[in-house]
Image (cartoon, rainbow over all chains, first blue to last red):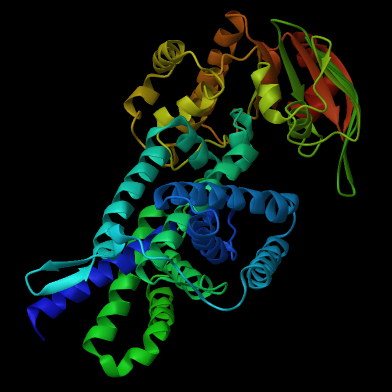
Length: 297
Length: 236
């Protein structure tokens, strides 16, 4: 294998890993705060892409305005989803909330098929992201360079919110002990809503960048990435933001490298995520960065 | 200041509080004593809005607290240091204290109070950057009390602050309760350690299976034969 091919694949892996990381964070944040797997998260990712698509095509907005609008809508949708599908079940058994999440996922997908049409749509070209860049003999789409940079910026902002602000402190408190957080005069509902908003916003960023890289949209495009990013979050240690990032990058890296170096196994690329999940769960059930919780009495 | 009338609370089929009435006058230390399951913790949880009463009234200076959310009750100065301490184990001592002051926006005042807490509990200053879950039970209880004080409560309610602690630490915690009260904070103390609680209390109530069965000044209850037999472990 030539060095240039290696670098080519490395950038591919880096941008795919970034996208996985962004989506995985949404799973992990919601799990951290509600102990709930938001099965509709992959569909929120899909909606982010469609919002951007319609803002650019139907509403003829400049792409950057369209992206901001799409992100705001995606975040609002995530918060609405929590309000409608999860909050009424806050005190119900976990299994009810999980069923509600699966139902929400199917609902969004099927309403998507009705509203957006089942036929794939292609995202209009945006020159800034579509140019081919050359580094020596390595050539790639400019979007593959943008994705890791944008991801890094978003991650930095997220970590600052969680660890550097009062809101983040409230989020960490709510994720540890709901009632104790209430006793601190924290508005628990608002904090949970905000968590969904942030997670959905990140899924929106992921969805939009995904369509820049793979410019085809269809209402089921969120299913496979959603599933893989859930796996990424579990591999990294669910509930742990850094873990989700690690899991996302690991998954993206492995997936691309398998396609690149073992082309005969390309058909199994999706299966590797699941194999990795099984292996990690067998060896380290709490995930790579997850800690087995100890309770002091 | 705080008046509870005919308070009833049901948990599913269990009638945990069956029409209890008591009051906490401003500036006093009041204690609720009673056996396990008598409804002591339930009373405190109902006051602070963590459980919904099925009937009865809870009023703070004439205003009903019954339909308020916990955060709004806390913002009115009614604060609970809950049973089992419930500190945030994965956050540092300092972050726990900041959470105690969550409703306040006067940054300088919060900072000053933090230092005040470190004077009151020098051990906490040593553990400032340490994850609260790694501290000893006594240190965690100090943190729970300090965290509650960070909100500058008007009425501080404490649920079993002595539970599981060494006698020396218990004494220290009760000394601090007395200090806090002397500075003007009203205290509602729930305890199984009836002797220690009655010794510092201005007034005490005995709760039995969801009802108040006896009440009186702390010293009087301490001398009462029934109380001595049932709660102070003294045979007659």
